[in-house]
Image (cartoon, rainbow over all chains, first blue to last red; front, side, top):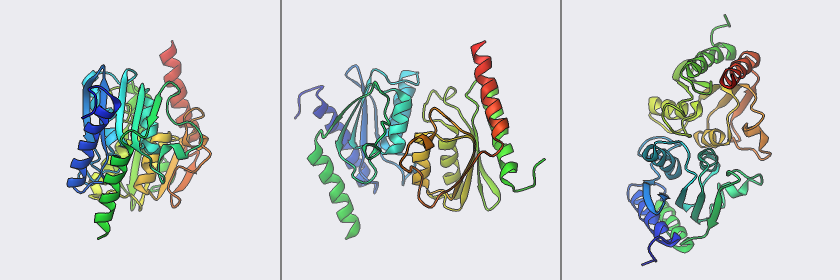
Length: 148
Length: 148
C-alpha cells in the first residue's frame, strides 16, 4: 500500500485501469485525474472497443474531467497515466492547461518527449517514472501474450 | 461553384461547417472526410458547446469517419479542414493513418507544421492553402468581432 494521496497511490489506481484494459484486449494504459485530492476521472484505453484511434485513456480522461468540472481547463488537476502520453495526448493536455502530468512507463517509440520542441503547456509540471517497473511489465506481458 | 469532387469542392463544404461553428460562437473550423468521393463525416469545432478542449473538428471527424467505416484506420480517406491541424489533431491523424490531409488557412501559432519533426504518418499526403483566402478571412472576422 502506498501512502494516501501520494503520486504512487493514484498511479496504482491508474494501473488497475490499465489492467482492466488488458483484460478487455486493449493495449493496457490507464489514467486517473485528481483535483484537490479527489478523483474526478478514471479511464482506460478503449481504441478497440470504440473503434476509434482517439480513444486513448488520456483523451477520455480530459473529456471526463472537464465534464465533471463543468469547465474546459484542468489547471488545478493532475493526470496520472501509466504510459508516457503520445503526441496526440500531449497536444490535448496542452489545450487543457493541466497543472501536472505524472506518468509511469516511458514510450520509446511514440512518447511525446521524443519531440524536441516542448508540446505541453509551459505551466504544466511533469513527473515521470512513477511505478515504472509495474507499468512497464504490464505492457511487456501484454505484447508478449499477443505474440504467442 | 467548384468542379465536383475537386479539393476546392470539398473544402467549400468544410467552410460551410466552419461558418456554422462561428454562428454557434465557436472558433470557426470545419472538417469533411471523404472516402471514394463519398462524404462520410462532416464536423465542426465544438469545444465550447461540449466544454471539451479535445472537441476539435478533426478529432470529431476521425471519430465519425471510423464509426461510419466500422474500422479504426482511414487509409483510403481524405480529410478536408479549413485550418491547419494543431499538434493534438496531427497526432490523431497519425494514428488514423489517413491517406491525405487538405487544409486551408495556415495556423501560425499552433499549426503542426511548426514542429520540426514530422508528426503525420509517413504515408499521409498533405496539400495546404486550398481556399486559403476565404478560410483565413472567416477566422479573422470571427476574432475581430470577438474583440469589439
